[in-house]
Image 1 (tube, protein in one colour):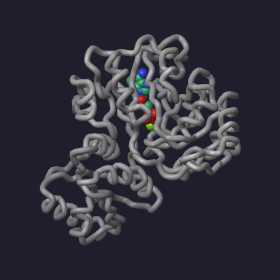
Image 2 (spheres, rainbow, N blue to C red; image 1 turned 90 degrees about the horizontal axis):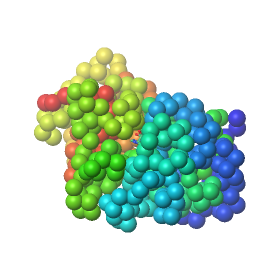
Image 3 (cartoon, rainbow, N blue to C red; image 1 turned 135 degrees about the horizontal axis):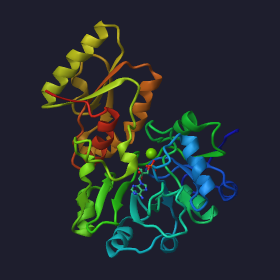
Image 4 (spheres, rainbow, N blue to C red; image 1 turned 45 degrees about the vertical axis):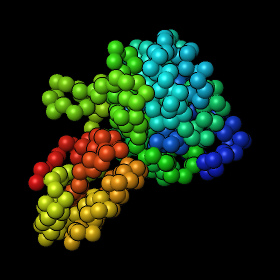
Length: 349
Ligand code: AMP
Ligand code: MG
């Protein structure tokens, strides 16, 4: 299959292109598109055959459900059984935005889309291209991240093309995304709402609106019996081919340890890389140092993370050391992805 690459103005996409992309989706095809979080791989959410195609294109396990994207509040009621009051308040605060909510699904949602579950994940993205595409497609787009399963999510159309060129009908290139990490997921099918995946909208922001909210114990547990509730959070993800270790401790001890290990690797003829904060990057004396951003503006670190992880596969890096980015705003979201990328390999110094 030939994949068409169409450049669109992210603020004001061409109506003709959006109509064409919408037709592809209505006919059961697949279109990748930008959102404010990462690029999504879209298919008609109410067409079970389209959902099957999405799993096939990504190589995604079919028990890992897709998020249904809507553009208007009125589109929610037909696909869910009920909208709890807390979910309504969160939507008022954060939709359109980087927030996904889990509801009990209605019969309109095929099991192919919900990964066999009785629940459905729904989000209203905050991006003019995504919103125009959803409306052009008839109101419901199922869209996981537009990467090959297991690789870091795509933050540019180039990343999408790397993974999916030849496997989907169209890629809409709307430039780099704003946030760079996937949406926060909040489950409203339990008594107290549960955060299944941390993201740009953090625990504190959710508490401000909801009062009570829990973090899924499966996200932090080292006990393999306590598994994350979101199926996608159980899989190995985001990992570069090179071995990645996270080093934590005081800034001085971390720099000293990484510097020694990098020199050792280089003496053995290996290519070593470091992921460092802007505050400490200048202190390293060896290796390819990637300045991820300042701990005081951690949106920058989040935004760079996936692009840097992808770059290691291209430049033949053999071994990677990362600082821990436990920053106050997005630290939970960043560390959740980084720990998965590192296979939970953490060295305390
Ligand atoms: P992605 O769109 O690639 O970011 O993946 C969607 C994420 O949402 C995956 O981690 C899924 O497992 C999760 N998800 C989607 N639907 C549900 C659901 N009904 N219940 C729990 N998790 C879900
Ligand atoms: Mg994904």
